[in-house]
Image 1 (cartoon, rainbow, N blue to C red):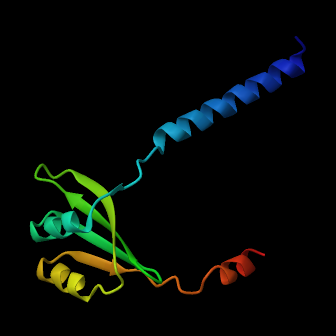
Image 2: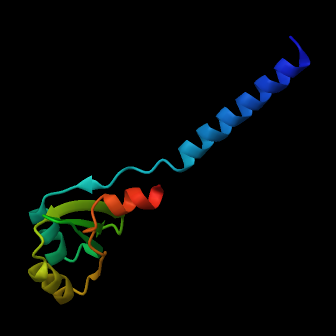
Length: 116
């Protein structure tokens, strides 16, 4: 085997090893989807640490950090209608930190034009 082939093979192996290590380190599980009623029960029982609300045209995505009795944290998601005033009141009553992301009401065209 020529020296240049050996060098190329070595570089390919090194790159593949780096990609494999990167995927091992950054392999996060996607958040688990739960029913809205389970989310409300968790809020009422004090098992929700923080909430992020992302309103869309017809619904609002909710991503939250669930803390179980052994202090283990897990990110979960659910969905609700766009009327979140009762939910925000409930979060405030339970002293849950929440954040509302800006609405994605621009549609696809501004993002297409920005990428172009």
